Image (cartoon, rainbow, N blue to C red; front, side, top):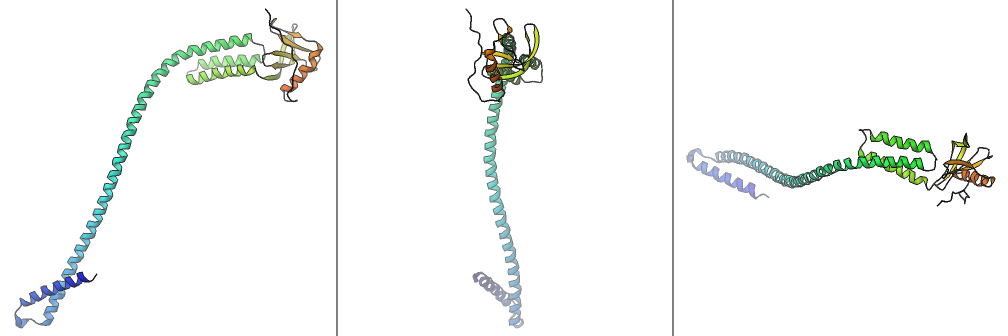
Length: 257
């Protein structure tokens, strides 16, 4: 650790002695030699400090250079990744453009299909048992209104049409009871109506004094005998979750030839 300062001091002494030897012998004494050595030593110390500063500055610049090289390498990797992403996005854009063209063709084909489906649904409701008739007809009318709206996407229109078909399909598996108006023997009456899937559609007066069913053959409501009063009343209560589910006797029109 002390070798460098000794070396510098020895060099300074040598320089000082050389300088002293250059002075006439009579003008030279020991104090002059030490003054020369001290001055040279100060100059050497100052020069060494400048050298040390330059070395430290060089070291810092080198470290910064290495850091910049690492950043450049990282940017090269990042740019390579971005280039691959851009190529992938351009490929996806091409595929999307092709898909959009196909969607346009499909839209032109699916709109007539939806209109035919709505017509078929309307016809089906008209030929089916007349339960919840107002609700079902309103659903068909809403579908026609949606088809005329430009602010509704084709996908949403198709979804609504499919939903209407699903609801109609569900009616065939449900037990429902509701209050409604029907015409029995030419008289308008408000009664409780019981629907058992699409198997049977019955009614019962609020006081239980009359029970009947819809005859799909004659397209009219007919009065039943008293043997159905209890089963229909039980079915209405079952549909309204007032009693637990159980077997139920209902009148069914047998298919004809």
